[in-house]
Image (cartoon, rainbow, N blue to C red; front, side):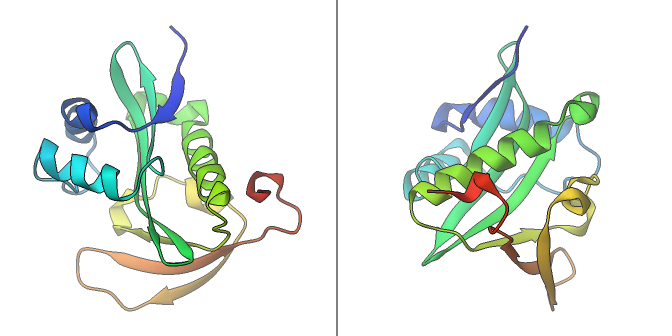
Length: 152
């Protein structure tokens, strides 16, 4: 079955929790309940993206807006799907959504364990920021001069 890339929905909590359970390196799921996911998605409508296959979620990027910047709190891909370029697909769709809101500056705030090689492939300028024991925050600005995905 084909993989569908679309906005994360409030009724996706169970599928998202199932994805998290399949991961050793993602840390705790960022939402304690379906209602907390619903609140997040309502506050940041359309900015979080999922890759769906056979009724489940195989990849997701959770994004929000902070003033004139976008921010991602996690990007996860099921281990059996990491060779399918889903990180790029869900992340690029999220960036396009942010661009429609005139947001061209983006920060990545991820647990260190969340890295599965994708971030090394993205053209960023990076500044490390001190953080607590569970997360490492990096401030990033996507290079837009040669990147059509950021065109509004």
